[in-house]
Each structure stands twice: as structure tokens, then as C-alpha cells.
Image 1 (tube, rainbow, N blue to C red):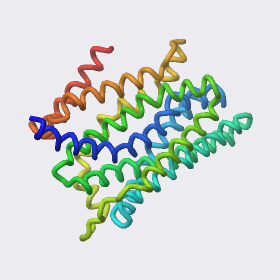
Image 2 (spheres, rainbow, N blue to C red):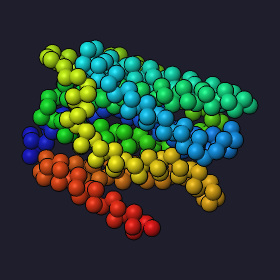
Image 3 (cartoon, one colour):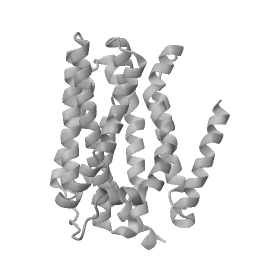
Amino acid sequence: MPDAASPSLAITLRVMSIVLFTFIGYLNIGVPLAVLPGFVHTTLGYGAVLAGLVISVQYLATLVSRPFASKVIDNLGCKKAVIYGLLGCAASGLFMLLAALLQQWPAWSLGCLFIGRVALGIAESLVGSGSIGWAIGQLGAAHTARVISWNGIASYGALAIGAPLGVVLAEHMGVWSIGLSILLVSGAGLALAWRRVGAPIVAGERLPFIHVLGRVFPHGMGLALGGIGFGSIATFITLYFGSKQWPNPALCLSLFGGCFIVARLLFGNMINRLGGFRVAMVCRVSKPLACCCCG
């Protein structure tokens, strides 16, 4: 038994050492997540729609920048993509810091926030895709499911930790400390990524992005529709708690991320055993049932 478990543990540790960069990238996403809506709505004095737009523009930038991220990965390698992504995270931290310093001029502060969120969205494309490709490139396609599973754990784990951490920083030091923390975390990630050996660049004919999009669109739309709930929670939960005068809205994001991690650890091998379609269908059926129970 130890002989069989040891190689599996070694592979898992190698995967974790690479998806660590996903954790760093999503920690930078999670830290301001519960603070920004309140900052835009209460401190800067803008409406809830604009507060939601500040959050969602990051995800729009992630979507639009996917072709760019894929070109970087194909031509320059996954390691370069991760490094560029961490530089984008650092840029977002700088603009977050500027937004906090310029809060007496709401329009300038809001402009800095939008620029920083766009930079963070592009960074998410580069870091998330680059880390997955980096791990698969080093370990082989046979471990794709394990890589994707641990990459998901890293991303949602970072959100679970980052959301309450950002609230603590904002309450005790001010919003400027969130921008500074993003800069420091991104710098640490860059130092780690720079020293690691990159995955080999796979040579071969590249399909145009529009052709790739056409092939994955039906499956991707299923994933996108499944993510609407999280997007709504992440964007408006802080404002909703504030309207009800409830404390600790960031704990909702932490609970969501924690449940995601537990589900991945308990059922991460289900895709290999039952197939991705069956697992996806069970998840799609369970979501509306959960919403009905909450209602």
C-alpha cells in the first residue's frame, strides 16, 4: 500500500507546487472582492449597478482576453503566461492603491478601479490557464483531471481566504492596504515562478481561436450558466448584507469556497469513474434544488 500511495502523493505535491500560482492569482482576486462593492457604493457614493459593474468588468476582461492568453501559452510557454499574469496582478494592486488614495475625487478613483479590474481580468486568464497548462505539460495528459481538480481547489480556496482577509485589512488599515497586499503577494509569486522550470512548448499546427471556441462552446456554456449563481453572490452579497445590517458578509464567500474544496476532495475522482457528462448533469440538477431549499 505505501508503494502505491507514494507515487500518487508525489504527483499530487508536484501538481500543488504549480497550482500554487493559481492560488496566488485568485488570492489577489479574493482580497478586494468583499470590499469593493461597499467602497464604490458607500465611500465613493455611486449606485449599486455601478458597484456591480466594477466587479463584473474583471470577468468580462477575462473572457475577452482568452485568445490573447492562449497565444501567449502556445508561443511563449505556460511559465511566461503565469509571469505575465502575476505582473498584471501587481498592476491591479497598484491601481487599487491609487483608487484608495484618490477617494476624495470619486471619478478618478473609480477610473483607477476600472483600469485595475481590467488588468486583473487579463491576469486571471494568464495565470489560471498558464498554471493548468504548466502542470499538465510537466506531468502528462494522464493527470489532467487531477490537475484541474487541484487547480479548482487552489482558486476557490484562495477566494475563501482572501475575502475575509480583505475585510480585515480594510477595517483595520484602510482600503489602501488591499492594494499594497496585492503588490506584495504578486511580487512573492513572481519570485517563485521565476526560479521554476517551465513546461516544454508543444509544437504543431494551431487551430484558429474561433474554431476552438466552436468546439467547446456547448460545454463552456454549461459551465458559464452554472457560474451565474457565484457571480451574483460575489457581486452583491456585501451590499445585501449591508442593507440588512448583517455582519460578516465575507464569510458567505468563505463558506462557498470551503464547500467547493470539500466537494472536490470527496468527489474529485467521480469524473474518472462516471464521466464528465454524468457528473455535470447531477450538479446542474442539484443547484436549483438547493436554491429552492434556501428560498
